[in-house]
Image 1 (tube, one colour):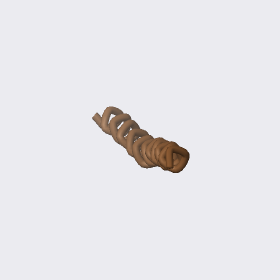
Image 2: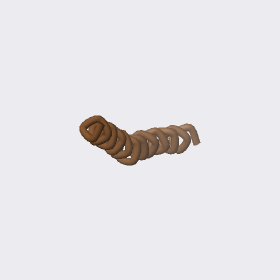
Image 3: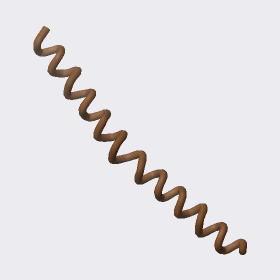
Image 4: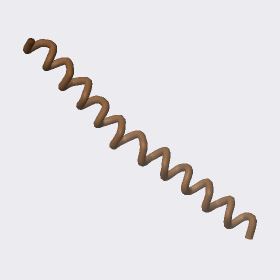
Length: 42
């Protein structure tokens, strides 16, 4: 059971890293693109 719990912990940590590191960057890029488009349309 210890090995399985360790694997679950590693997977959950990897998911947390992906969520914290990946999502904000994508959102920031999307927001930046939207801002640039709005500026160009103005």
